[in-house]
Length: 182
Image: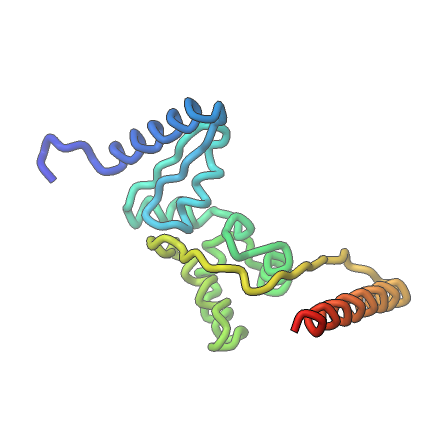
C-alpha cells in the first residue's frame, strides 16, 4: 500500500454505500450492510446500524476483540434460544468475552466430537469463515416446536401423545404414498 492510498476500511464503506444506493434505486428498498473480516462478524454487523446504514469493522485484532467482547451470545448465528438459556443458566455465560473466559469449562463439558465447544470459542475470538457458503439441494424437511416450560406433567404428556399420533399418521401416509409410486 502506498502512502497516498486510502485504508481498506475506507474503500469498504464506499462499496457498501454504493451497494445500498443501487439496491434502493432498483427496488425502492433500503438495506444495511456489515463489512467485516469474516462472514460471522459481517452478519452481526449487518444488524448493527439498521435501517439503511453501514457498519465497517477494520481487519484489526484490537478492534475485533473490543467489539466482540461485549456482544451478547444470542447475536451469534448458531446460538439460539435454547443454547443461550443453557449457556446463561448453567455456565453463567452472557457475552462472547464470557465464552472465552470459560473456554476450558466448555471443552470439558462438551464432547470432542461435538462442534459446540469449538464454535463457542471461535465465536468468542471473532473467528469465522470467509468463503461463500455452499449451495446444497434440500434432502429433507423438518418442523420443530419449542414449548414453554411447564410444571404440569399431564399437559406435557398430552402434548407428547398428540405429537406422537401426528407423526405416526404422517409417516404412515408418506409410506403409503411411496409404496403406491414404486
